[in-house]
Length: 225
View (cartoon, rainbow, N blue to C red):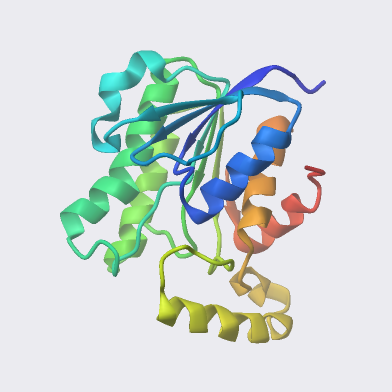
């Protein structure tokens, strides 16, 4: 039986997928309160929203406020946007790892995080290795219901201009129909599919902890929000 009156925490609500997720949760009757831990305001006015403007690198200072039924971690950056590797690691590894640790310590039993296709803690590629190490840290928190999503290239329009990414998305849209069978996981994916999949996983039993992009699409089709 699905619970109502739940509280969810979103990290990264001002990002592409996090913003879509926030919109869906605000419309979802199962959720009474949405806590946002963010460095910039969303600009949204809704009685469900409880917004905390904080430095996410200092998140542990707000552990007493980090109370909810579920945590959705949609934080991430790019090498182009954050060329300094130490800062990049603080964002892509540090924030999710700290959030998982806090969630475990506060008794939160549901934790969902967006990783990336190719995540591998043994990779020679810094980006893939960082994501893989993040996944390991999240799993080490031993939260009973943990799901890690590895989307392929995320389609959809961002507020900031990313010309190379824009053309890459257009190319992938053209190639998507050709990617079949084992290649389906390389198809680009819409942020709404990721968000819907996260909500479904939070509200239903699902054994698998790490989900590839084609599996995310399949799960999203099951969610009615």
